[in-house]
Length: 267
Length: 267
Image (cartoon, chains in turn yellow, orange):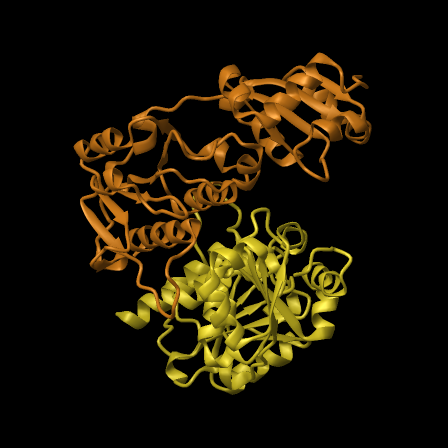
C-alpha cells in the first residue's frame, strides 16, 4: 500500500489528473468511480487498455471479492485513504480510479455502419467542461454516430468532462482535429448534409429533413461558430426563440437539434 | 466610498450573497453585472424594486455617465475594488451589483393570458444550480409561461442560479410551493394537461398533442420524480434513448420537452 503523497506513482497520478499536457504526452486518461470502472473491465475493447487500477484502502477492504477479480484483469495498487483523496478529482472520492490508454477512432467510426443513419456533431472551440460532458451524454442517447472536436475545445479527457459524460466517453467515437473546415469537407464528400445552428439561419431547424446522413456545427458558448467554420455549412438553421432570450446554452441547443433528428428518424 | 470589509453594509452584502436564509428573511436577492443591472433599471416593474446599487471604484470612474444616470434611479454606493471583489460572487467581478426586492407572482401569472398557450414547468427537488439556471434560460426561449418549484429545490436566488438564467429570472413568472401535489391539482382544475417525464412512460413524448395548455413535471437529477408527485400526472411520457445511456441531464430532458411544445405550436 502506498501511504505517502511523495511516492512517484502518486505524483504521476496528480499530474495526469491536473495537466492536459501530461495526459496528451502519455496518451492516457483517468476514470473514477465503480460504475465507469466496471464498464471498462467488462468491455473487451477497453479491458486491454487499462494500465493500472488504484483502490483506496477502505474500498479494497469493503470490496474484497471485486479486488480479487480486478487483479485478474489489470495491475491493482492500493492507496491509503488520505493519499487516494489527494489524488482524486472529486470532493467525495469513490475509492476506485483507473489509468487508461486512449483509443483512437477514424472517420469511418464517426460515420457509423449505416450511411442513412449517420449523425455527427462538430464542436467548434467549445470551452465549458460541463457542456462538453453533457453533449457526449446526450449524443449517445440521441443516436449520434460520432463527434468531431476542434483541437482548441476543452480537453475531452479533463476529469470533469469525463465524469459528466456519464460513461458516454467510453462508447462514443470521436476525433480531435486541427483543420475543422478540412474535416467538414470530408463529411460533405461522404454525402453528409452539414447544418450550422446559427442566429443568421432563415429556416427553423425542424423544417429540414434529417432522414439521411447529417451533421451539425455547434459553436463556442460566448462567440458562436467561427466564420470560417460556419461558412462550411450547406444550410444555416435557426432554433426559434421567444421572449427576450438571445441565445441558448450550447449543450441545450445541441440537444434540441439532436433529438429532432432522433424524432424524425423514429417517425 | 467604502474601503473596509468590516463595514456593516459590506457584511450584510456578504450574508446576502452566501446565505439563502438571509436572502429569504430580507425578501431580497442580488444581481451582478452591467447587463442584468441595465435590464433592472430600464424595466418599470423592476426599477422600483432596486434597493441599492453598488459600484466598484474603477467601474464608477470608467462609467461616469452611467453612474450619474443610475443615481437618478436608485441609491448608489461605491466600494473600493478590493472590497467589491470581497463581496462579489464571481472570480472576475464586473464592478456592478444590485440589491433587489423580490417580486411575487400568483397562479394567474404562471398560466399566462392565453389558456391555449399555457406551458408550465413543475420542478421537483431540483438540486443543481447550473441546471436550474439553464432551465429558466431555456424556458423563456421555448415560450414557457411560468415555472413552479417545490420548496426544496435549490434556491432560485442563489447567485450562481441567477447568473446562469442569463436574465430570465427577471422575466419568467415562478412560484415556490410547499405542497407540490396540491399545486398540480390546481393546474389540472384549470384544464391543464399534466405530463411526467418518466422512465416508466409508455408513449414517446412527441406522440402527445401539446397544442392546448400543458405542464411537465421534471424530477431530481439523481432520483427522478418523487412517487407522490409523479402520481399527479395525467400521462407519463418517455424520451426514447439509444445506446447505453440510462438517463438525460434534467435540464436537457426539460429542454427537449419544452422545444417539442414550441415546435408543435409553430406548425
